[in-house]
Amino acid sequence: MLVMMISVIGVGMAYVTHMLLAQWLGVAHYGHYVYALAWLNVLVTLVQVGMNTSTMRLTAELRAKNNHGAVLGLSRFSTLVVLVCGCVIIATIIGAVALTVVYELALFTPTQVQTLAIMLPLVIVLGLLNQRMAILQGFERVAQAHMFLEVVRPVLLIAIMAVLLGVMEFEAPIAMAVNALATMLTLVVASVIVMRLLNSVDRNTGLVPEYHNRTWLAVSLPYLVIGGLTVVMDQSDVLILGTLMGGAAAGLYLPALKLSQLILFPMLAIRSQAAPLLAKLYAENQLSELQRQMNTSTVSSVLFGFVLLVVGIWQREFLLGLFGAEFVEAAPAILVLAFGMATFVITGGIEVFLIFGPFERMLVKIYVLVVVVNIALNLILIPLMGFVGAAYATAATIILRGVLSVYVVWRKTGILPWVPVSHQFDTPRAD
Image 1: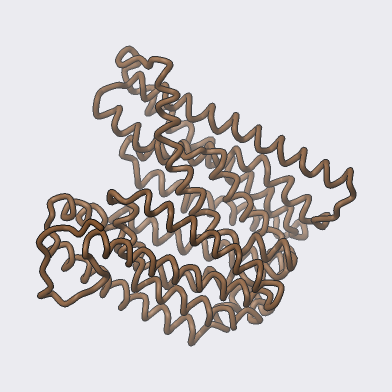
Image 2 (image 1 turned 45 degrees about the horizontal axis):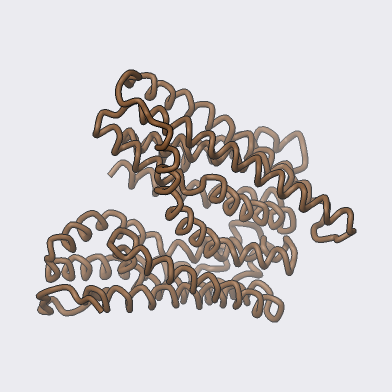
């Protein structure tokens, strides 16, 4: 319950942060900022190599076996991976930028270059923060981990920006620098807490042979694939829009995307709470009870999502106006995006079987197809329709993702998002 409350507060903080930044920066500079932020999310996923997820899982497993030496070794190794990968990625990007200068390729404006340059060190800092949060969750400090990422960091960002508000004019590079400072301060505090946890374990038990490093990487790589595909799905519209149409278009589009995504929040919250029970029922082959639980999850998600859908469409201009008067121009995009999100509310709950069930390979195949379609549609529609084209591409691909998930799970298990309660199952389907 505490984790859920923190998540709700975190969602609210994220929206408040973007609203304030949009008002303080204006459309153009806010667009440059969110464009760099989209690249940040992609690069952080790469530097972690999936070890943020595997570190959480492996820390819990090693603690259960009282292998405290391995916990310490895993912490050091995951930190080293983030540092090395971060340095390699930053060096690669600097080299690529140098080539564009040599060949006089004007890909970015000076403001974009400055914002992206400040963003690069933040890749390592945020990667290390996520790694610390994974260790906290492995020590069953889940609420504390969520608090650092979803509450402490945005509060620090807003507080620092508020202090600077009266002494300087805000631009995208300054906003990114403040983000880096807030993340660094959060990392320092989190690192102190993690070090205390690690120092509390017995260092003389369960010492780690060298070969475990390769084992840990092998466990992490599947998470890198899934995490990488997920972040590309989430960020490709903003990245392509910002690259093809400029920062102002990305700045107009993102608030519409963020507001439409609120429709998904009840479904995502409900399915995350239901996931352990659904996985247990599937393992025990209690498919009738499993379908009843799925019915309940779907109906609850649709009811709460419908309320947010109506409010979002009815008050779309008012809600966009909270970001600034210029952002009302993006109102048509909300209508398109809201339709896609509403469809996913109906179908997306079933995706939990692909995430937590024995169908990881099918999940990867679905994500690959969705990413390819998403990128293709964005490249086709954005030059024709601008940010509204990005909205159509995103809506179409999230509908495709939901439909494919339903079809695969139905073929494998017979489970659907909703069927009459009288529907009975005997054994799982396996086609």
